[in-house]
Length: 305
Image (cartoon, rainbow, N blue to C red):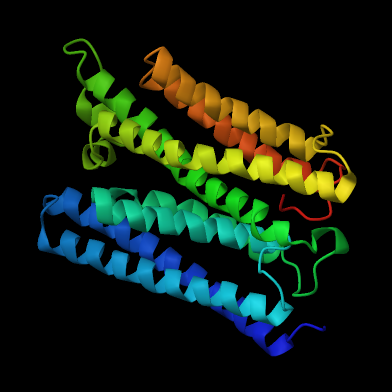
């Protein structure tokens, strides 16, 4: 069945508006920091900017959902059948995770830092990775695309947020360490980004947030790998063949497994655990971008699984 060009155009338009909305929200979160730094974190101007940014985030999220839904109706299939659609979905999950954290942990301080990679991710998706709405390639035309790929999308979006939080943790931990050394070291005002570091919560809180996100995402990623193996057996008559995508998915799993194992058994906290978290996220990026665009394998046609 041919794609509905009207709905496809509407989906593309909605995604553009979602990107503008996320970008405006990012500026709002940045303005909250700027006003708070100038007048005090509890200043009315900072509070208004932060609240406006949250409203913009929610509105952009709703528009983004509309883009995904109309893309699915336009293509007459699930809307995650290529790298463009997968990237859009991962970004949507990342924003959803942020909104959940916003409600449960008052994590508005993450706003600008989550919106920035989301805007970049969607910008890359809408330009370099863009694909017109159309039917699935035959190998993807399976009910497993609704199971395996959804799990991979969910975990990837959560891992994106955990990567952002981990970077912020490392910056905050360095700031706290340097400002506690006392006389003979660089003063607080000499520390690059000192105002921003004061705006962030304690490093321990950031460490706990990153850990909670990874604790959620890791079993979802594990399920995605298992579901992918079952799908591979149906499609290629083998569960595992060390295809580049399979290999890097497993390497990513090992990195995050090492992170959780080190925290649970060796008591790793702080920078050592954060390094493992960033290694895991780097592996995830290789798994998605490098494997799908540079390395030839059984999964190269899809960019999703």
